[in-house]
Image 1 (tube, rainbow, N blue to C red):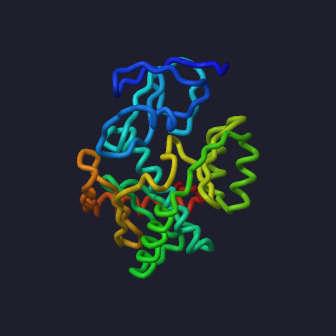
Image 2: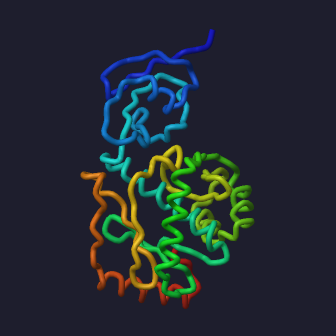
Image 3: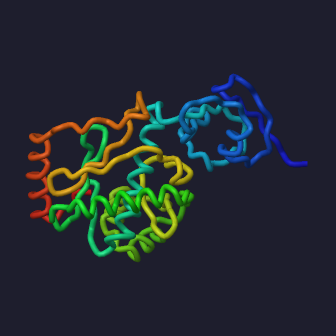
Length: 248
């Protein structure tokens, strides 16, 4: 007989007994949780976990969606990974960076500093929509850091290697989606299908990617004009480029 564990779901205020090793996503499918927006992740004993994480011991679980602060960040990270893949599919010969947050969205640009064209933005938007429609699963795997560095080297991701080297560890996590990999500081959604709303807009030499408002997820956040802050960042980027320091 398979071992079983008890789980208290705070969303429904019920306790269930499930087989050991069940994923949070499988547990979610058995619970009657009513919500307007898709569940993106869960807290397990007060620690944020992805929906493909497994339960091996008794736990208190609380599922969260985009309206929760951490669920919102899961959404942001997932949309940035989708954009990362779209750029890889269309412009794999150019380096692309998400430079910094802008309002509730992100400012992104190619490292050649050439202004992005309307045609390129439209191509990226179309490819992102195809990636979302493809429902690509997003997987997280823990490997030895030196092995992950080897994978990043194959992709030419020197910035990610440099980032890992700032936090020397024997093991690190790597995310994969179809034919691309990435590194993130927190949880992502189980697949690309969890993204329901976004937009790309030209901004300075790059792109502003707009994401939904956390308190009104059917509405995109307004673009915030932050010219002074942007000018300060550009000056900072100029000096770190001169000094040979990565801005990522």
